[in-house]
Length: 235
Image 1: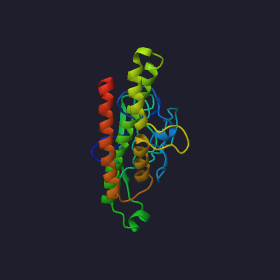
Image 2: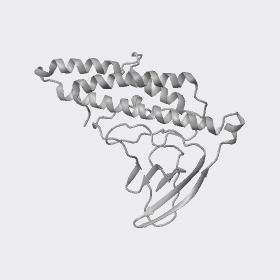
Image 3: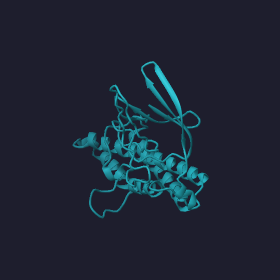
Image 4: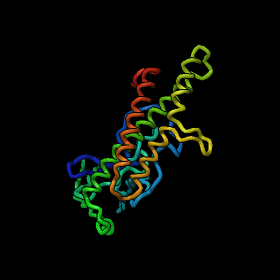
């Protein structure tokens, strides 16, 4: 079963073969810690847990939480929870069973409590576009951290690679917050926090959040360039 937006682009895919399915770039099988995955902040639509379709005979109910896929977590978990919430508008649902397929229209309307507060559909669209950019930034930093962890593991205990490992450890110290209470937050945590901050409730995104995204985007590009110089571009 697929949820499509007004342009016919697939928003979410659900399958009887497993949980929610999403396309994502391959990377190392090293999932970030729970506080680094871009989760947190349920919003109106909840955390967006994967849904598995029941393929047994009979009538079944499936609930779409109105969210897009969440940030990348690992090669085996490319779709995280708590994705950006869809904007009110025209959608459709396409169900496919073998060679049979059927598509039905779906209209998502504004919550009257939100419109009563003065928030417009244009505001929600702007928030959605911002959250999609930050979601992708969370995915990217998670993938970079996964590459670093794999490199650290492969170089550990090899005397001839000690200098390379030191360089990678130094880079990791700017990206990964140590698992010690009250540690100084590093880049991955800052990016995840920005995502939580603007994805937890319907709101008008302020200039500070947009400016912060640009700052974090620039710093992540710098750290990625450093990693590519040490390890080469990802394959």
